[in-house]
Image (cartoon, rainbow, N blue to C red; front, top):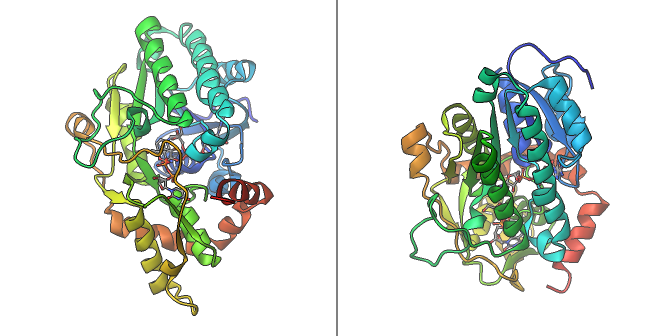
Amino acid sequence: MPKKRPEGKLYLVTGGAGFIGSCFVLDCLARKQAAVLNLDKLTYSGNLQNLAAVMDDPRHIFATGDIGDTALVDELLENYAPEAIINFAAESHVDRSIVDPTPFVDANVAGLCSFLGATLRWWRKLPAGQAATFRFLHISTDEVFGSLGPTDPAFTEKTPYAPNSPYSASKAASDHFVRAFHETYGLPTLITNCSNNYGPRQFPEKLIPLVLLNALSGRDIPIYGKGDNVRDWLHVEDHCAAINLTLERGTPGESYNIGGRSERRNLEVIEAICALLDKVRPDPQGHYARLIRHVQDRPGHDRRYAIDCGKIEHELGWKPAHDFTRGLAETVDWYLNNPDWLAAVQSGAYRNWVEKNYHNR
Ligand code: NAD
Ligand code: DAU
């Protein structure tokens, strides 16, 4: 890792080898917005292939490590003095948190708390001007707000927290720590709470890539319960655009909800993927929808998420640009056009997870 900081602005991005973090890094470098110091532990979902296009770019510095490793974080902050930190690093999958909550507490709560502490110590030593413009942006989720009924109004920034899964409980705790570091110590933090992302490079434990992968390999497509749970789908590029605006224009201490204004029942999403595949990659054995199987529901499965993103629209001027129908078709195309990426992520560890989560379901 070079010790020298590239010229101009630099962001410390954590979790930048994952699905959303890599989209942010690629976009940031493509737009020459800032150089990126990318700190990622490379857990099962961290994938350097996501960053192949920028691994030789001198404005991208990759460091393998844990946000909870204080000695490493101290060194990185001293050497690189970022203008902002964007924290994507987390354990991110609800089903895994149900099997074992401990890694979620370790990364999302304890790790994040150490990371905030190291950031605060470094930030306090900055000259006043730099300290005032520095930002710590924490990426969170709509799941912290709990579950909605079919006709309940969408989550706003004022909706009380009511997390239902170990994952969402850990994210709720992380949000509280971020808020507390602002209120108690004045660290200029921002929080974004977004809905379900979709797009290229998502690890195929999550619904959309899992359905695609199973369909293409002729395996059953597992749908939890009746398939009438509702999610609000946000294109990952729209999410990254919202993060950028929040960094540039957001008020420290505030949180911003980000959603796609695209609520869909899970069954609708799965059927849409099957119909797209029927068109572009027809299976001689019949329609892909024949593979759909209703399986045992996720325990504590949140019924519906819906985001009211009026605040970020009115205050920061953001709007989702992607239409879900088109965005889903483009996403399906991306996976079909990147068979090497798909093959590489299906390591033994991935197959073990699939066996553990779906066997006997
Ligand atoms: P992901 O699992 O694809 O990526 C997470 C990345 O964080 C991986 O590269 C992993 O190696 C890294 N990481 C994990 N623990 C780490 C640690 N202790 N130190 C350093 N790096 C670590 O997840 P994603 O879908 O890209 O989600 C990114 C963030 O966005 C998470 O905080 C998640 O809670 C949040 N979020 C995701 C969604 C979604 O739909 N995917 C929606 C709302 C919020
Ligand atoms: O809402 C934001 C959250 O969205 C993020 O905070 C999480 O990091 C992200 O993983 C996602 O959580 P979900 O639990 O909503 O995503 P997942 O893709 O796991 O599931 C989406 C829906 O599909 C959910 O209702 C469960 C259902 N599902 C999922 C899988 C993996 C199935 O029916 N079958 C499946 O095999």
